[in-house]
Image (cartoon, rainbow, N blue to C red; front, side):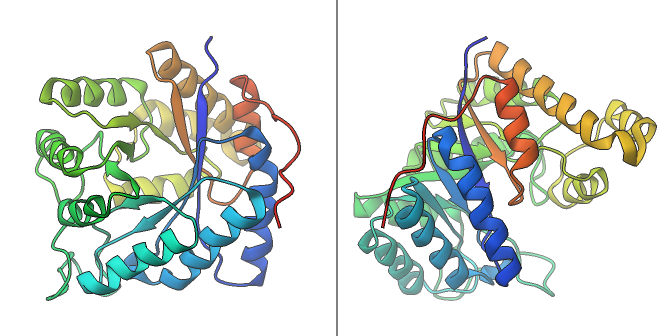
Length: 287
């Protein structure tokens, strides 16, 4: 089996304990030589400053290629593009450009009167700078605000045409879900590389809640398997399920995998080891 390239997603810490967890996770995963790591942006832009601090720290202290999440929520165009300029000044040249979720207390996304209306407008503005690699989101199953997958494919085509060179998918449980989506995107002329987003299941209850929020369907086989495994067998089953999914993706021609780590490295490390992704050396000595 071909060894895939990997990348990892982190979220910014909100307190001291979470800070230690993020740095421990980064220290554990950095030796695997990820293509890049991304840092999320809280719902409604609530972690804007925390995201910036985590991005710059990961880049400067761990020598990682960091892609900063950026959304259109609750900010003017000028404010949003200033964030991009600040990243560029700090030596960060990758952005994951997203529309973003509705702020807390709101049912649907509403654009700021002076802000970007959607991710396509955001991508176009960042691309006009000429100094950023732009990634975007993709949805193998319909986004909660989308009527169907065909609409999501058409929207991804617009984002690709606007300047996004790669797309990271929402997580999914079955490899065929990804393959069907990939085939539809290819047929539609999407040129952006599509990276499957992989969620190692740290908690089955948590994974189910996450799936409900983002529109990921939960197959009957997964419900049954985790119910039978119980709490005692959940960790072992989670590893087996994740490794099998990744192996199926690689066998189907996928050469890059993006892991949603939830700032917990252990399961990710085990899955990567099973795929042949092993440490490439000590961490770089970066001041």
